[in-house]
Amino acid sequence: MSDFSSLGLSDWLIQQCKQMGISKPTQVQENCMPPILEGRDCMGCAKTGSGKTAAFVLPVLQKLSEDPYGIFCLVLTPTRELAYQIAEQFRVLGKPMGLRDCIILKGIAMNRPFFWESKSEVRTVEELDQRYILTPEKVKDAYLVHLIQKFQDEHDDWSIMIFTNTCKNCQILTMMMQKFNFPTISLHSMMKQKQRFANLAKFKSSVFKILIATDVASRGLDIPTVQVVINHNTPGLPKIYIHRVGRTARAGRHGVSITLVTQYDIHLVHSIEGQIQAKLKEYPVEEKEVLKILTQVNVARRECEIKLESTDFDEKKEINKRKQMILEGKDPDVEAKRKAELEKIRSEKRKFKERIQETIQKKQHGIPMDSLFKGKIHKNY
Ligand SMILES: Nc1ncnc2c1ncn2[C@@H]1O[C@H](COP(=O)(O)OP(=O)(O)OP(=O)(O)O)[C@@H](O)[C@H]1O
Image (cartoon, rainbow, N blue to C red; front, side, top):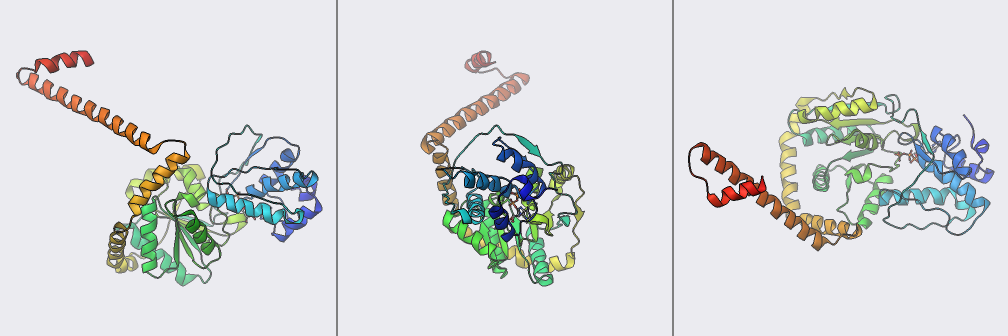
């Protein structure tokens, strides 16, 4: 394996890397840095937590330091949190050269790059220590409480990320876990951006040990302290699973992932197993312990649901949808009108089909057809 010097980095940058605990290039860095430094377009594809950010940040800083000029680099990210995280890496690594950065939210771009793909894009079982599935017999929530209790009892220094499918579920689970006095905080797209950053910072600094999030947090976030990832719902796509569980076991550390699975999700587990080329083990739980807290957890959920219903959570969802449309360049009112018209056409078609069925049945029973409708059938079919 080469070192950073042979890849073309200057001493000051190598020193800066060392201060961040980066002493040897990872595979993606080794393979992507030379073409980037040559000025070629490059696209790197490697497993989660393998240092893809530094793979492009380092050559960018190297080039910029050789010829510092104007606006040099534009980085596009899928989430706002990631934009801040990458800016921070630029800031820390580029400190000696007085690098200045600016974060702009929202944007779309296309690329035609040089492509380098790691042979082992998918994490192997050895790297992510244990990957489990848990198949609850009763409700999914009591098992979650049980798991957290277990981790809290068994580990002094612990940090868990829980992924769930909707903002509402995320909010309810957070409220529930707080009811059980777990230091929990949430991250989802229906929160104000300021709150999202604040919550992430509180989780990163270990003030809160549990982060319950939607997939807004499944990509790219680098929080080295995360030891456990729990999938409260089975991810619908293997890619989502890989991104989610990739929030633990970062840069060669240890990590465990547990996915709650119902009988309806077995096919999803099979496709995940196919993609990661590993079998997910059944996580052993003491059912008796779970049953003990079952009623308490069910009551807590209902209470939280009622509490959430009394807030403007659904209203906020509508507002967020409208905001999103505006950002996508669509007019929410025109869209609403278009949807209503589409629904009207669908409903008319539905009614028409029903009338055809009715008419056919009438015919079968020898009842005369409505002559007007008969004409319509000929016209339309
Ligand atoms: N050469 C290296 N040696 C050790 N640690 C490194 C090295 N390069 C980067 N890291 C560290 O590894 C961690 C993960 O890096 P990074 O966030 O870039 O991963 P990634 O490949 O982009 O992951 P993801 O696919 O989840 O976005 C970071 O904490 C980073 O500081």
